[in-house]
Picture 1 (cartoon, one colour):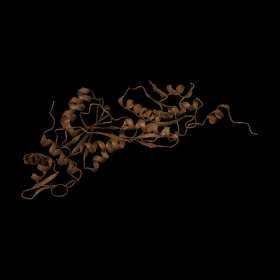
Picture 2 (cartoon, helix red, strand yellow):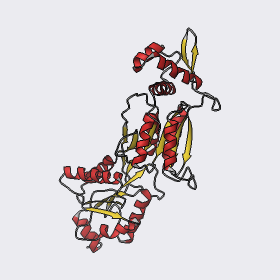
Picture 3 (spheres, one colour):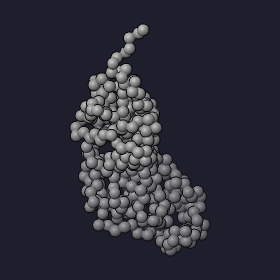
Picture 4 (cartoon, one colour):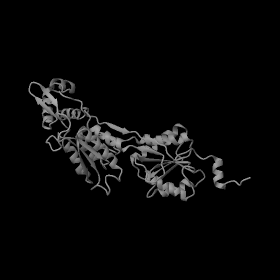
Length: 370
């Protein structure tokens, strides 16, 4: 296994990333000044500058100093600088990149890279072992700013390998509890808290949490976020409804029993939430008149005309932040965890709970005219 990048590698990456962010225009600080700032010796800085000159990112002029080369280098030049993004599929799904959730992260990552004059090497692979080995190897390549592993099914042994890549690798959209490499993820605790807070403010006291029976850490954090908020106001989740196959399995529990919920947090996504709403309508219940709903979903709107109240997971922010982490200029070896906060969109599927007299009227039908 490769060891961690050397001090020289780290200095080169800091200077390269600063150049890509436009931190230096014209002449760079002297070698001695950079060595003092970065806590290293002048020889290490000289080696790093030589690597950057080979990448055509700086130009060294004898007796004058080192100068930044403006962005806009030719993509065919030997000074090509690139970032890698790896996603775990054998090949792009039908309709890629317009019809699946990861496209929002990939597009944002690519757009942020383009603004930095970076090329993105996009890799689709189901071979996790090979992807991890490549990521660690690329950490030693001067022209590669790093690799983003997007939602890869990583095992503990992979994390041990990835720790050798230092800050030249980011794991995105995956619950890695053992933080051995920089990680960007959604703030799943806040997702659950925000959904529950919205329903409590509307006046709901019987709130259900629904989702697929996955046991994933992100789901557990969302449930805990909702529970923590409810506990603060003296409430608990009235129902935990996890299905194995299709969300329609939970419909009976939402409409029957002595105390059915008046609101539901739907941890399936926009499409599945729409399916639950249609199932409720077939059972004689309507959203939000009989049951309020908050769906946890991406920014992409549902295909139907109905506008869902949603806790929005900003995939574009995840893509942008992943690239920013690769372009950080810290020599600190401790990895960074960045949590993307959710936002609340409040269109038409959440409302205050029905009043008791409203429920009686709906059950008995309209009153006769006098």
